[in-house]
Amino acid sequence: MKPTLAFLLLLASVLVHMGSSFSFGREGAQYASWDDMNVVAHGLLQLGQGLKEHVEKTKRQIRDISTKLKAFNGTVADLSRQNKSLQEGEEALKTRAQEMVERESQVVNMSAEVHASAEELRAERQRMDRLEERVDGMQQGRGLKLNNSSNNRSDDANFIQRLLEAQNKWIDDLVDRIRQQQDELEKQNMHLQALQGKVKQRRVKSVVRRKHQEIALKDYTEEVASLTELATDCHELFLKGERNNGVYAIQPRNSQPFDVFCEMTAEGGWTVIQRRQDGSQNFNQLWEAYQKGFGSLKGEFWLGLDNIHTLTKQEELTLLVELSDWRGEAQSVQYTFRLGGEESNYALYLPKTICDSLENGLTTGPSGLSFSTIDRDNDLNADVNCAKQLSGGWWFSNCGQSNLNGKYPRKPNIRQRRQPRKQLIFWKTNHALRTTVLKIAPATVKSSVDQGYY
Image 1 (cartoon, rainbow, N blue to C red):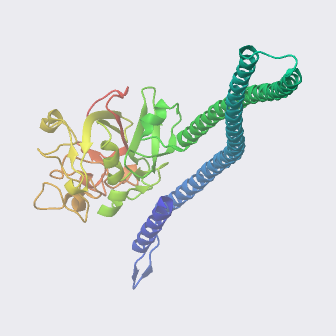
Image 2: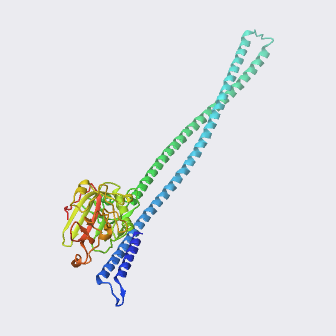
Image 3: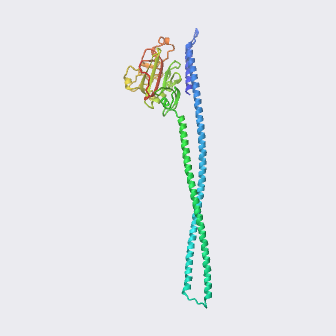
């Protein structure tokens, strides 16, 4: 989306520039200079190359993410099948356990029957004992007359003897049945205990396997999330092992992701927020363009006030300003700073020592210096709009300290003769600058560049 918008803006600026290069009068048309056409062609080529690289990088990222998602989906499907198998095994265990409970109930009923039979046998034995006692009493208490009653006594004794033998046989059969039922009950109890042990063991294995699967799924999900999670800035990329300069996608906290250009040094990662190097990008833009950002991250660009503010909300940052002029001299200056939001017109807040110094290119008021563009006048000069007078958008005070977003001189030999110094890129001096770089990093990252002031 951003390259398309940049292309449209660049195409519009090219058309306007080419339109302004032609004038129709009585003496005919005048054509644009060869240098202007070279600059336009250079800008178009650079934009096309940037679009091509961005599309290729996006395709690679999409292929990588698709591969990881396919692997993730396959793992989830395998885990689902395993989980289904475990559920089926658990249902089978539940059915087997129900059968065991029913058999245990049958065993309990059989035990109750055996107990009732034993009680009945005990009562029958007691009755037989009483009967034997009566028989003995009858034999001992009466005088037996051998002549008259010997036959009758013998018949009664035989009858009682047969009755006792039948009763004893029935009792013995009942005792054998009780013993068999007790043996069967013991076997059923042993089988039931073995089944209960197997069920408990399978439940433990099922719980352990499911726990391992949950842990594996969680670890895999976290790994996929870590692969797709973006860093919050260039320094976090540095801490994760990145050491190459280039364009990366980041996502500050509570923000949408966007692309930045990272410069990796020995000390850490720096997020570049502005670069001027060849004049291929027009920086005389309106408020909305400065708010959203413009240019090519591999060439000249402005990152955008919204994105810069999002980065400054995370932690205290260091702003490093690197400058070089047409004489080949290069110096830098470093600030601790904070940028306000849209409600403050993106006010720039610097340390009090910087605010009180008249030797610095950036000065701020007591409550911060607001950002200004040609269509949004927020400077401290009540008479003129510094952005209109000096060109470009910047934190202007009274139109005099600095403007790193001014016009880029087209030719070194005419840069001061044909354009006022104040309309070019400058930093406290009367001569125009050739390159500028603004980059930020956490305050804990220290720059190894020699610091100085223009």
